[in-house]
Image 1 (cartoon, rainbow, N blue to C red):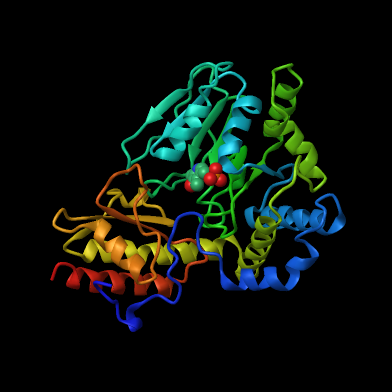
Image 2 (cartoon, rainbow, N blue to C red):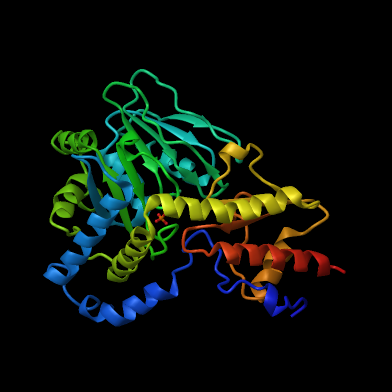
Length: 370
Ligand SMILES: *Cc1c(COP(=O)(O)O)cnc(C)c1O
């Protein structure tokens, strides 16, 4: 190994990836101690259905959902949700705010041939755009946190009669404060801030969203079974999924939700991610070779920090050296193509480990090429 970072500078846990992300050891212990009553058992029987019920109740508590809102789930992660939305949530035309890869992927799904071409509002990576009311738009969509760039956006309902506000919260859910009543659909997969594993999507939905789902399902539009949101509504209410869900994902999510709620809920989680991300942004602001990629501080994500490096420094070499020392997944989003480190500051990550990470990076900077 070229550079060996001294042990007293290393974080206790070296997982800083944006997804799949750090799963806390206590979640794995809980899986070992109580997983045998779940794993390898039928998802149509009480133990698994009660687990799904517990996850739904805890998500409802975490988001403080108002009367009439409900928690849905289905298989396939957020990517499957995009196609499900194209089939069963967008009536005619969506407006998609795109300021990175993930917003762009939903815009592509919203370009399905039975819909009108989406109204795509693009911003340069590292900045963001806002929704604008346009005649004929029935879904306004944007990411709460654009994981590819580290830009967060506020959640406020678009004041357009009959239209739905649909938020991709895959990396934000459970790590950023917001008012769920400002969204009709707040959907996510649990392998990011919620520190579980992949394969499922969840959504907090308003009565207006359920009404839309039921109306489109009854309209005669062709909808594949697997992507039917109507099936998701019906099955979720029974604490089920259409087909077999990933039981480990549910178990890890359940214990993570309990941990967050026991510590004080969303407010606690948001203050922890804010503390961790500030460590990195402050470190970069003070550095002569690093700067936060997102120039407007009010756009900077509290859960995904992107740090650009001066061209005299090879950020890929830093990430590689960190990896060789057990600090993994600090590489930038592959398609962004910047001289950058990207660090998750999700709720599972200890703010002290983020402080240690900056010490480790300082050590690598002092010793790279030196
Ligand atoms: C990771 C991510 C996705 C994709 O999630 P999958 O569960 O892998 O489909 C979508 N949107 C955002 C904002 C993400 O960070």
